[in-house]
Image 1 (cartoon, rainbow, N blue to C red):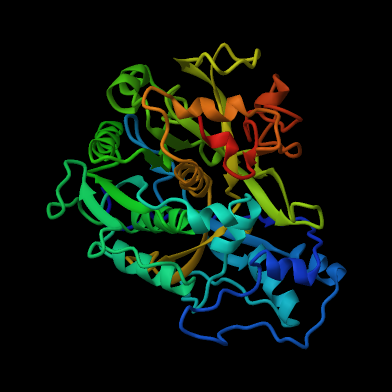
Image 2 (image 1 turned 45 degrees about the vertical axis):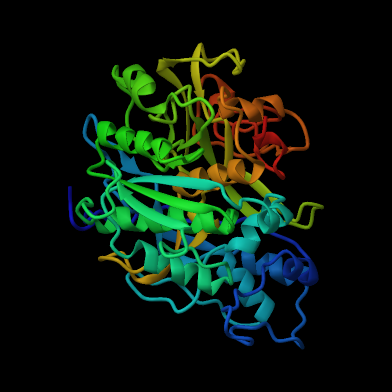
Length: 457
């Protein structure tokens, strides 16, 4: 494996524009959309109390959001290997930055490649919790629950960067010393760890920060695979379960193969454990392990503020025909009994979804390697997978014989899920494989969380 990220060029000519968002200033503030204030600084980046801004002005400002981004890990893994599904914003202005500028009455800042930022540039904990109806649950649930993050290679700065993120947002400390955080290899060692890699370190920071944002009271177990091979990543999943995690997030994927059914039984068949997997970032096309019938396959959305009763709106994340949330009909894995769409005779991806568009991405702190420039904004379905794993954790421990990927299907069509009905990630002969519609569709599954009811048995 590399010790630095690949020298892949920035994705050029593919700019994601965040759509119009209309919301009252007071509502935005109550929803946690003001500037993140450092826990120990009473006035850091505070919004001037005398500044007034119309909802029309906010919408116009947010509509300007556009970014460039690059893949954190290898774009096309070789056979038997996976790549992470993390996308790091390298240029432009995020929806969060445009909104902050509108609220302050100032000119929005821009993200510059390899430039350090002294403050968050993407959505933070209050945004995520507000968007998915989790504010109360995040405050009171999660204690004693462990969310495991499985990634390849080592992030030497994982714990320190996690501390910076949580301190910025006033979240409780999560350290090795207080028992909240633990980092191990795929064999469970805390001392013999894999070689470090800058790209995977960014992925690790993204995963840890999204879990922190969604479930601040959860413990976090980071299991680092020796390499990004399917076998090593699968072994790390088994180690996470062996160490007691009931919620395991996998923000990686690769091409399907004839070995997948063997991997299913060897690594991902864990009744009583909620295992999530990213649907991918390359538009339509099945990816493994999202195609496993034993995991919850998580697609991606563009998340924007709105004047509706929810305060948010979502559409399928799509930048181009080859960049956007994954979806697809597996050619290998059998269809789980609870999945009843008729256009795909095998496993259909995805089951549910959450924010993934880099233009409406999440804030991440990463200080390791060539990508470790401090505060960054990340997108990709690497953001949506740990978010959904954390929602499962907030909802409580699954039944010992349950496959929690079934839970959202039990709540299908109810108010427990935000049905995403607009956008597409490609053009398919079977429309719902690529295009959002009322009810189930490939890119967003049954929708996004609205509270916890769709993630408990």
